[in-house]
Length: 330
Image (cartoon, rainbow, N blue to C red; front, side):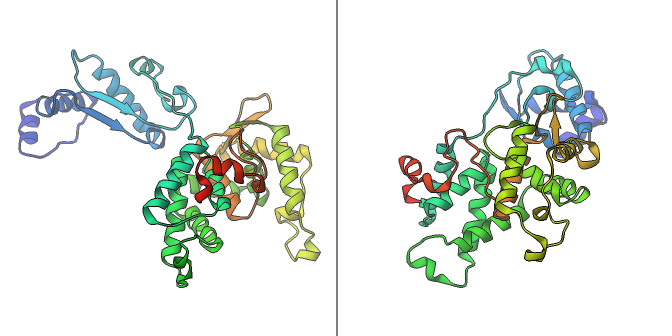
């Protein structure tokens, strides 16, 4: 490290590194005075701009050239593969030990609910508890977000009768999920809204069909079957309902039309919200977007199938399953 940079740091002013070498020198200088085995955690790596990915990749490669470098780096991000997370340099992979974390199972989602309810001395009915675990898509972020918004809805409810028994009402659930949609990660919300706005209202029901069931990667034919089921349950006659003719509930797409729209939702013009493998299989480009789509469907009263293969498909058959995991108190 240059004498000028060293003096600046010792004066308590952190200079902006002008190069990767400067950054490594600053780290080495700090490590001499910090601790024996410091740990640096870089969270939400997948949300960083690709330009930042390149700088971090270069930094890691440079650090690897330093003998006995004592710092441990933990990088966290949501992605199916390392190729998805590291877009710049394939050679960076060899410096990492990869630990894959699967989505939370039902019991873990339920444990979050139970702990929060016990702490606040409130109760969810079985259906509410099940719906929260179902639409969370295995991401604790959505469990926390939905519960938080429901609790605030209860707290702000001018009708305090719920305090007599401590139960969250249906109005609290609906207000909480609607608020969760508005408060969700801006990147998720913007990506979803842009895709729907640039295409048509049909795009949203296609995204719901893509998020139906437990499979992260789905065949186009299975997605179309989900779409047909949603349409059967929600289709409306424009003259009888007063809805505009172009509303998604007033027009059922044919399978070729449905497949064409899936293909378009994989294009950059629509934010590449979906991606395909060229053999008829599709998935969400951003895994958490799938959970957000399920949340949006819930606020529109659209019934999607559960996001776990062991969960029954109809909510009224779930009480025994829920009770087994101490969700009978929900």
